[in-house]
Image (cartoon, rainbow, N blue to C red; front, side, top):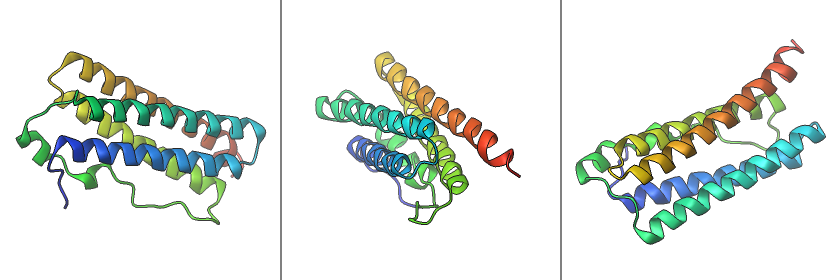
Amino acid sequence: MKKFTSVDEILDFAIGQEQDAVDFYKDLANNSLSPDMKQVFEQFAREEIGHKARLVEIKEKGLYKITQEIIENMQISDYLVSIRPSPGMSYSDALVLAMKREKAAFRLYMDLSDRAHDQEMKKLFLSLAIEESKHKLRFELEYDEYVLREN
């Protein structure tokens, strides 16, 4: 399993994951079944853009520091979702995928928060983790409302 070798690799990975989330939510918004969910997906895309901007700033300013030993213990596969969006994906499958993506993002930010030595970085990554957990909860509620109740 591939491991990170530097803080920049960790941040590049997180930035890439945020961009993937932006693209994913924009696609979901464009294919949404209801105007309400279209707005939710568009809002999530905007929030993920904000997450990405915060991570880019951290990388550019060199604000995040952790030891090489900790970096080597972080494995990329721990934060990946193996399912990829597909053009014919059903709404329920898209919601499940969104939940899994948000859970993976939550785990990444919790791990980065736990491993940060600087209190400001701990707070920042914890706040990102909390935002991702809120997204996951919103998708769980949507799944319950529109998928489970139909069955």
